[in-house]
Length: 160
Image (tube, rainbow, N blue to C red; front, top):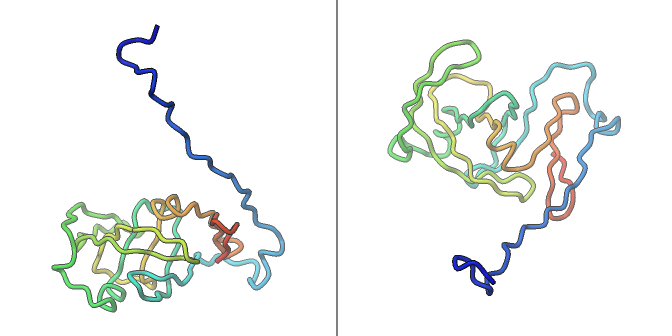
């Protein structure tokens, strides 16, 4: 007999089938790089509908950071940001008070992810930093040695 809280017509919840794909880096991925190097992993991506250069992929960052060059270049104003008043500590140990945060679409090789950028008014050689949240949402495997990222797509593994 079926317990009263479970009806006989209930179907078990279907689990999404995930296809695991192996993502590896090899000697061929080193072509085009100067070795040895200690360069940061920097790429170009489409953010907020615009092609953005100097996008740093930082495996050590727990947040996505936007610097003045980009928010000014996108024509964003303080009114466009939602409130974000938690101080940030930079690599140099200095405390930064964010201007706010904004959610923008980041497109890399036709794969889209909405990103909450924390907007700061500080100097950086980069326009944005993409950290763990973006890396995890995209399924990116970054390699600073190979100066590439790889991630799964419907068509296989994309390389940037």
